[in-house]
Length: 241
Image 1 (spheres, helix red, strand yellow):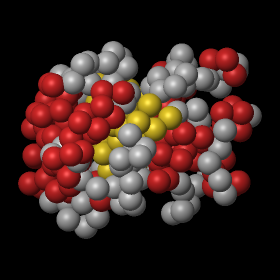
Image 2 (cartoon, one colour; image 1 turned 180 degrees about the vertical axis):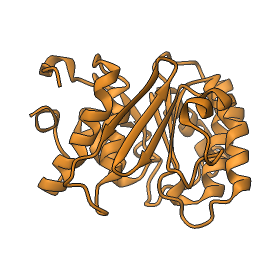
Image 3 (cartoon, one colour; image 1 turned 60 degrees about the vertical axis):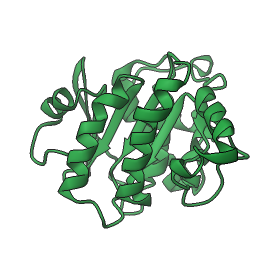
Image 4 (cartoon, one colour; image 1 turned 135 degrees about the horizontal axis):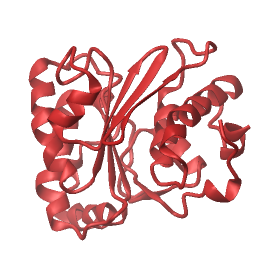
């Protein structure tokens, strides 16, 4: 892997909507990100966004969304909640919020809560294009949670119209973008306890940095391994070493 220099790895105030799981948010902030709406969005698991976009909290929620660069939607908190959050962002919030060139949405389908059904996959597929019209979208899937099971990630990305499909199929990690396909084999140290939140938070952070795209998978995997071996979220220094 080509050497990188620390000045390249600065998020420079990149903001994550605070309504994300603690593990993901901790890693993202540890790598230099900041939270938008931290005083409003509290709780683990995160509350559905719909509960904030009404009444006295709507203005505060709109402000947090307008300042956020990254939105992380996790199916681990329920398929219905994920779909509701995606619909609120795509249909109600983003169209009425000043656009940001850096806006990115990561939809994580790697750890379904047990209620993930083909109906949910189809509904998410129909929402993906709407989200993409307002932000770059990375859809993270496993073979079991793919909106179109058995279809290659290259064709799935084209079908859904999103910026990227990230496929986690241990020990393989694969990505499909408009520039083609790339892959990475997770280290032999990886186990069932591999910190996926760390891998995905680091991968999301890399979308905002001046790092060649072909290095993203490897660096994100190294972040997970560093966390696994050290028991705590890694720094960019540890990831690069």
